[in-house]
Image (cartoon, rainbow, N blue to C red):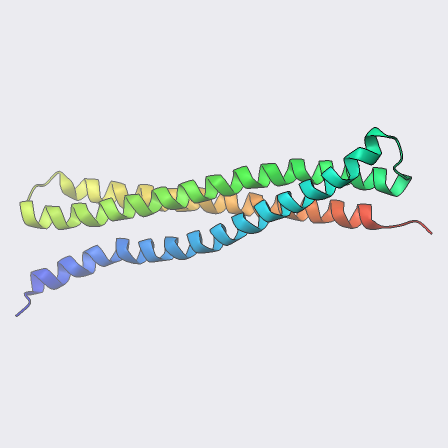
Length: 161
């Protein structure tokens, strides 16, 4: 039979476990976005490589020249977005590690009965939550930068008649 103490221990260890699952979902989404951004950089680089010979030989028309400028501008912004996404992944992953450490320290405290593990568990958990918040801030900043790239693409694609 499971004692009330064991049930409380499991309940206490469950909070960090739920946060581990939540961060796992956040990581899954951001890894998908990372792949999309990297793929977009590759597509733009390929288009740029196709335009560069004409730029060197000075055979590009005005629209091709503007497109080359637009590509350069977008690549710079995409590179910045990749760095932001890297930061998001780092902080989400760090938070998972901290939640695991929190859960482990709760279990160890129950087994070893040492008082100094109680505040350590809380510190791990709160630091993990702070890392999630920092990751979310980086993610929000990345979304904003993504919007700027869309604005460049739309602005540059307008052809005057």
